[in-house]
Length: 181
Image: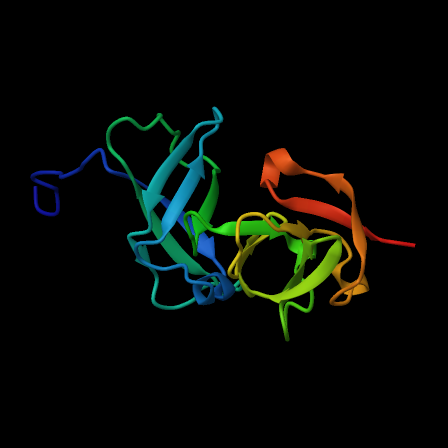
């Protein structure tokens, strides 16, 4: 019959469509960005963004992000399911991280305090990625100095300090410092 399909094409390809804000695109979300999809059963699927719409749409002014899912080895996901997707917009392997409060004056002159011979020593750092309460720092750390992780704004270079609590298993070098009275 005229207007009737002679042959239908299809595939088992699956993809996730996510609406992303312009701010996410400014942070680095784009084609090739890594995405981690949480499945309803608690599993995780790693995939990469294949496309980001060129213009915002709708009242929310969001961009549609397409994430193709791997065909094999992925858990079955129901069509139309709501899923949590986390985008990795920046990463650095083997980076030195500290609890975020350890870095003082982050916007103008980021620095930390190292403890040497019972005294606080100011150390300028290059602050990097911050996520989940931790921040990447870059400075010439010797692998031995302890780093003050609380109240760096209350310290000055050369002030006598002592360790109130150590947290060596998690960080290997961080201590909470209290001023000597």
